[in-house]
Length: 109
Image 1 (cartoon, rainbow, N blue to C red):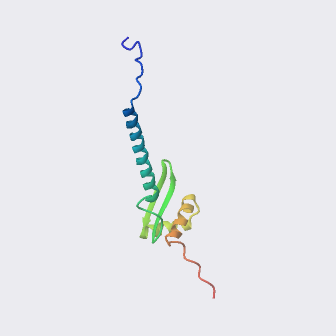
Image 2 (image 1 turned 90 degrees about the vertical axis):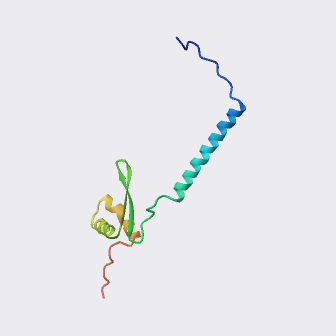
Image 3 (image 1 turned 30 degrees about the horizontal axis):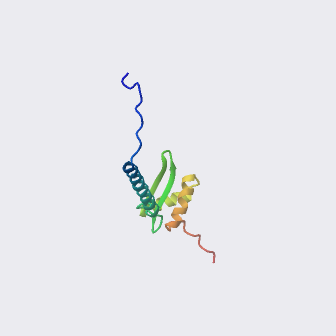
């Protein structure tokens, strides 16, 4: 057997300890920077508004993102207000934020 005995462990020198601390601090700073960036700038789509909708839907792989503007958003919102399913319920608030909600009923005179 080539490894019949386990060699004795050698103590870590001061230089090696400093190197480990520097690497750990650099990793912590990097992770903190990524976390701050993710919190401040969540994505290029942003929130719904100005005729565009952004809806996050549950999916088999976590979440799906739907982002539509213009005619596609109007069709999606029209369908959401005409339907009663879960997808429609998640889409309606985003349509309202985008100003694509149903037209109010005319007032009686």
